[in-house]
Amino acid sequence: MLDNSSPQEPPDAPAESAAVLRVVCASEARNVETPYATLEHIRDAALRHNPQVGIHAALAFQSGWFVHWVEGPERAVDALCARVRDDDRHYGQRIVHLSRGPRLLMTPWSMMLSTNPESPLLMRERVLHLTQQHERGRQYAPSSVMRRLTAPMQLPEALDLPDPECYTRVGLCSAGGSEAFDLLRWLANERELFVDYRRFAGESGLDAGGAFVDQMYGAYALRLIAVARADLLHGLRRALMQDWAMFALLLCNDPERNASLLDRVEEAFEGAMSVPEIVLVGFDGDLVGQALRHGAALRLNARPAPYADPGRAPTVWRALSPLLKNIEAPPASGWPTVASAAAR
Ligand SMILES: Cc1cc2nc3c(=O)[nH]c(=O)nc-3n(C[C@H](O)[C@H](O)[C@H](O)COP(=O)(O)O)c2cc1C
Image (cartoon, rainbow, N blue to C red; front, side, top):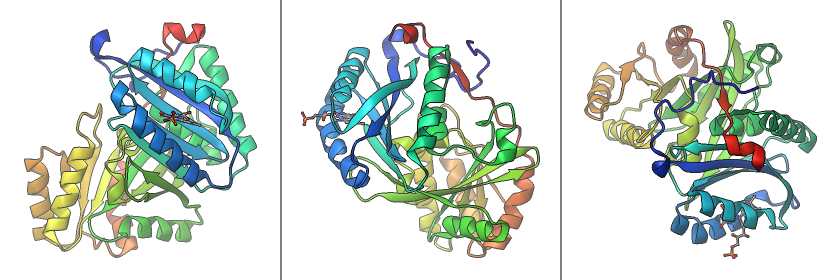
C-alpha cells in the first residue's frame, strides 16, 4: 500500500532539474574479516569516481552486509549501481529505497562500521522485510532505512508499537572531553542497558566514534545518541541528525571550544530539512550565556538546560530528564515509493 502520510517527505521538493535520484541498496559481503580495510578501499575508488559525476554516497557495514546509499544525476547513479553490482566483494544487491528529490547526503563520501556482533541472519531478515515492503509500494526515508538496517530499535515494548521507527532520538555531544559517551555508559550501568558502538568516517582522516542506548521513556522509546565532534560533519551523520528531536551540547569551561562546537553544529545543519532543538548544558551561567549568544549569532535555535556539571553524568541526566518529557510524539516514517521503482 502506498503510504502518503509521511511528515518526513521534504514538503517542497525543487523542480525535477534540481532533484537527484536517491537509491539505497543492501548486499552481502564476501569477506567479513577486515571490513574497515574493505570500506577504505571502496572509499578510495569512490573518491576517484563519484565527485566528478555529481554523486554523493554513504556506505555502512553491519553484520556481514553493506548498505550503500547513493544520490546523484540519474544516469550517473544507474551507471554506478550497475558497476557496483558486478563487484565480487559482495553479492545479492537489493534495492531497499528509491526516490527522487533534493539531496539528503551533503558530502561526497561517508561511511560507518558497526561493531555489533549480531548474526548476519538477523540483518538478512531486516533486508528481506524492507525489500518486500518496497516491492509492495511502501518504503521509508533513506535515513530511516539506514537506521532500520544498521541500528534497529530492539526494545520489546517499542516493537509492539504500530511503527517501530517511531521513537524519540536525542543527540549528545561534548565541547571538550568525552562526557557525552560517559553519560551513556553511566546510564547503561544504572539501568542495565546495552551501549551500541559505531565508527564513522568521511572522505579522509581518522574515524570517529558514535554510540547509542535505547530505553522506554513514557509511551515511546527514547534513543540517546553520543557523537564525537569529529563526526558532526560526516554526510551520513548529518543526514541522520535531522531526525533528532533534541541535540544536547555539553559545554566545557573553555569558551573557545564551546564556540567551536556551535560553529560545527551550525555547519552540520546547513541545508538541513529539519533541525532539532539545541539545548546547552553547563554549570556556569557566564559560559552558558556566552554560548547562547554565539548560538544566536549563528541563528541556532538554542536554549539552556537547567545548570548541571557536564562532568557528572547523574546531574546531566537530571537536567535533561524534564526537557525530554516535553518532546512531542515522533513522526511516522513511511514514504511513498516513486512510480519507476516497480519497473526496476
Ligand atoms: C558495496 C560497495 C559499494 C561501492 N560504492 C562505490 C561508490 O560509491 N563509488 C565507486 O566508484 N565505487 C564503489 N564501489 C567500488 C566499485 O564496485 C568498483 O570496484 C570501483 O568503482 C572501480 O574503480 P576503479 O576502476 O577506479 O578501480 C563499491 C563497491 C562495493 C562492494
